[in-house]
Image 1 (cartoon, one colour):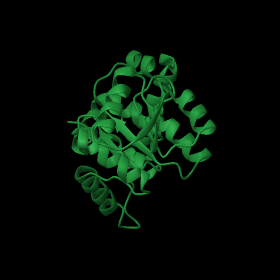
Image 2 (cartoon, rainbow, N blue to C red):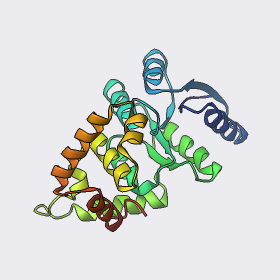
Image 3 (cartoon, helix red, strand yellow):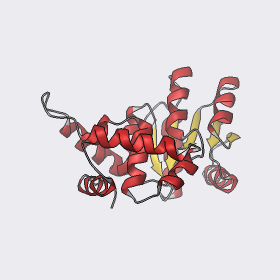
Length: 214
């Protein structure tokens, strides 16, 4: 029997994942958490074969939760499930220790394959993510090659960058992250300086040219 902890702030999503996995024929014991703090508590108190972690949760986002899980239990397999396209977060999260990245629009059988790979100690790498990893490796071959501008950003700065590039207002970003607008504006100022850009339009153009958004 596989012990699976599902971390997502939507109950209907958690129930849907359970149904998909149960219908595959394997036996499961499920745990649920609707936010990062609850997930960390359950991971500390119990043993799990795999954690299914959404990254788009209010407050402490999945990226931060993944880092904390890996700090406390480095060998804990964590699969990331997200509505964000692979181009935006997959490489960054796999580098941070995720066992795989699965877009929520993927076919249900992909979730089953991902869980089976993770509980076997393997990484689940889709063809899309494999291509992104290969491109990323190619971009880092040269020792003297300059690091891409967006890779200079922290995880929180990177998320704000993507949201700004998509045209999301500061007030909405602040609400999503449970931060003040002033704090998000500080992140914006910092990332503009790091990327040597002047405004949101330049961020959007950069994101499009680097295929981070469409």
